[in-house]
Length: 365
Image 1: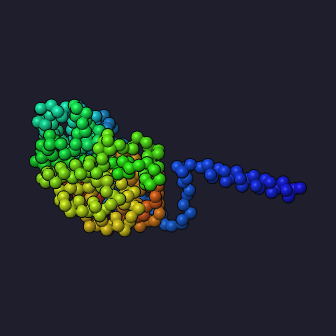
Image 2: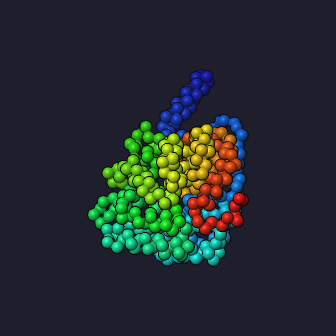
């Protein structure tokens, strides 16, 4: 009798366990790895670096001392704040530049932004060009274009404002004349436009962040938006463009290399796409070595601990470690173990060539 009771209990436990496993949702499946390998913890970059892709919307009133202290721990020499105008005001840009000049003039670079509202007005182009000139005199050292241009911004008739709209051409030309780069974020990862099904590599991200799903009939097709930005790069050869996020070709480095070959005034940066490089270590190392003069360091958001993953991917030969946002990249990553000469260019030398007025004394020559 006792034996029968025991077997019944064992059967019940087995059935219950199987039931729990069968009911588990895919997004809950996150088993810890049983792989035992060497792990390298890096909290400070091997060389001082320039983060060319950051956003500090509160810079006009921000106490920069705490931020600089955190930058020092990371070995970040200079942060580029791409959101100089915040949500679009002259006062915001003036406040940001004044705060930097007064307190930490050599640790921050501020970019300006443009407003596409009123682009149909006859004087929009001249007004916008004049604004960029004024902002540079004030202390801005670059122009940042948000992804809303090309996807979300509409003209007075409700039409999508294309990145290569001819009314904006004089702005790109003026940036070239002034010697300032244009860092442009165009589109998003291509899977955001694809069907949200079992074949979509970003299924989990779109499940958890449904607002990231794109509709080509609303935003324009991914291929169209990407091609529009390549058009302006080729049309304005005297202007240096920094194609953000590896131009969304981190999963196709051969194509990105082809574009770099075709467009000598195009540079790129690794903000928010380190996971793309980390999952293809040999290919990524070969790419960064070949195009070592064209790629810069960027992060895109301010969370000091997340930089550790960037350092680990770029500097070590560690194997099979996770990205810090599982929904963003559920795959594991590997270290590239980049050579020092490549690291120096990625961390700071390339940015020094492209972005004006960075304090050279902060970086080894």
